[in-house]
Structure formats: C-alpha cells, structure tokens
Image (cartoon, rainbow, N blue to C red):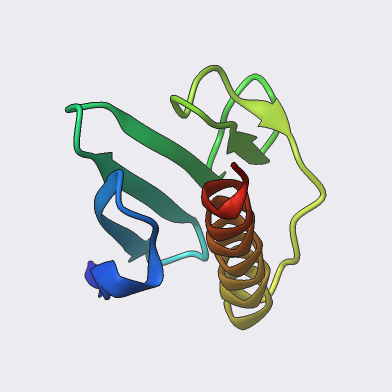
Length: 103
C-alpha cells in the first residue's frame, strides 16, 4: 500500500488534511481511497475499486461517505486509473477553494 498525504495548504481552512491510499493486488485488482479530514471531525471520502462486487468488477464508492458501490467505466491500466483519480482530486480541491472564496 502507498499512502500519499496532500499538503494542507492546498485546502481551505475547514479541511485539516487529506490523503490517498493506493492498493494494487496481484492479478490487477486495486483500491484507491481518497479521504479528507475536516476540522469538525467529519470526513469526506470516495473510493475507486476493481474487485468482484455486485455493482460490477470496476466500481466507485461515491462521496461524501464512500457509500454503496456504483458501476463505473474505469480504465483498465493502473496508470490511467491513478490519472483519473488525481484529476478528480484536483477538481475537488479547486471546487473547495472556489466555494471558500464566496462571501
């Protein structure tokens, strides 16, 4: 497993920290989990998976709580999956910063 912590300065004040946990398994299955920790103790999280599941082998556990899995058309190559997740996180950071700038 690889854990990458984001620099807190990327986020507006209510977010205390964020990380991505990446797990790849022999055979090509994976789990990529994004988690934000908020100052009030809440978490905002989502997860992208490839493993046997009723929702389909490739699926996502959507935010804000990485709830029940939903089918997802995720790339098959792990590098493309990681690029998809990093793009999602970049958009999430941008949206948080934009919303904190509103009066």
